Amino acid sequence: MRAVSAGERLHELNVTFLSEPSPAPGNRIVFFEDPDGNILHLIYRQHPMP
Image (cartoon, rainbow, N blue to C red; front, side):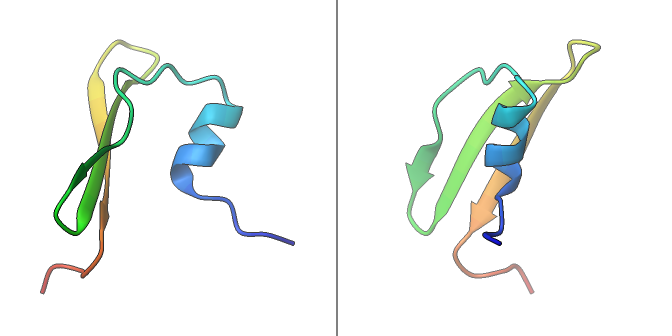
């Protein structure tokens, strides 16, 4: 069984993303809304913060 990323799971749940994942050096970020309209984001960090 393949692991599913948080972004893939949100997409499966028909979450509306406000942007495409935007790359930054070593990171990726994407914004989306929760059911109440709050703007949230996911960050992938190539190297975890200490």
